[in-house]
Length: 156
Image 1 (cartoon, rainbow, N blue to C red):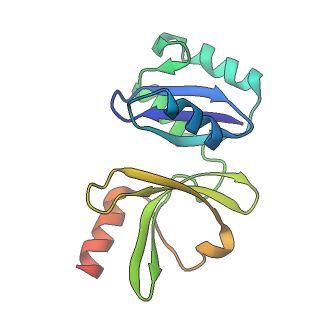
Image 2: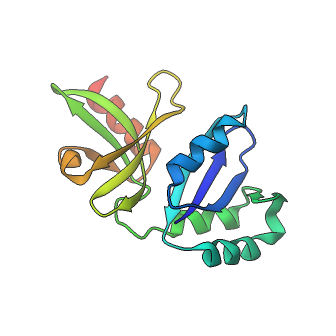
């Protein structure tokens, strides 16, 4: 699986390959003071990773890290293989908003990797793997602005 990991402080994006991208994220985070976030995974092998490195070589900043140019960001955004990828959401418990975040990818059929946002700062916090069956009551949005508007208009 080819993954895209973003350094929140610098904005740079690592393009890599791993069978376990969330484990790889943890390994990279251990050696990095800056917050790293897995933003996307796509089907592919080491050859796909190498072809992406070549395609974006003009944006390479260091090793497998690339500057967050519009071209790279657009590629990541448009490489949605699943309809829920990139969607923002709210979850509910006892008629109250419980989680907010976005769908990163579907690394395994029927299971989605989600990025949760901290309520106070709105910054990325935890990532979880969630079954589609647990997502049936969630509200989905196309953008963070739409998600925030829904929250403020309905719950504030």
